[in-house]
Length: 241
Image (cartoon, rainbow, N blue to C red):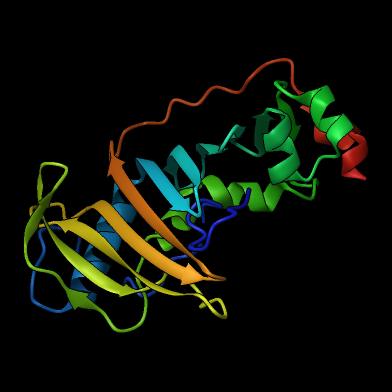
C-alpha cells in the first residue's frame, strides 16, 4: 500500500533505529535524542496503538486510519474517492477496496478492479503483495514513519490533544528523497509513559508542499481482529500472474 504524497507516512511504513537501552517512562534529561529514544521505546513496549494520519498537498487529501501491533494490524487508506482496507491476521493478509483503491494501491486493471470491488481478497506469504502489506500495517513500520532523523532539537513544553508534551523536531523520516526537503515534529507526553501523542510535518518537492498531521491513542489495547469470511484467494486472480 503506497502513498501518493511526499512524506510517505501511510504506506505505512519501516524499522526503528537506535532505541538503545532507554527505559520507557517520563521524559528525562534534555537531549532530543534521549527524548525520542524514550518515546519510541515506550511505544514498542506498549505493543499496540490506534492512529489517524492526514496528508494534504496540491488540493489532494489522503487519510490513513488504523490499529497496529507487532504482528497484526488493520489500515484504511483513502485518497479522494479511492479507498482500500487491509488487515494482517496471523499469516494471512485480507484486502478489500473500491475500484479506485484496487487500481491505485494494488495496480489492478480497471476490469479486474470493477469485478472484485467490495470483496475480500486473501493474500498469503507466497503472494507478491504480502510482505509490503504486512509492513504497511504493523507497528515497527508505523513508528519509523513518524521518527525524525538527523539533527534534532526540542520545542518548548506545550499541549497537544489535551496532553502536556514536548516536541522533537528534525528532518523527514527515512532515507531522503532527492529534491524533497522538510521537517517533522513528534510531540511526546511529558508524563509517564512518555508515548507519542501527535506529529506535524511539512515537505516541499516537485513544486508542491505537503502538510501532515497525525494523532495516536489506545496504547496497549487489544486489536480484536477477526478474519473475514468468503474471501477470494489472490493467487486465483489474473493480476497475480
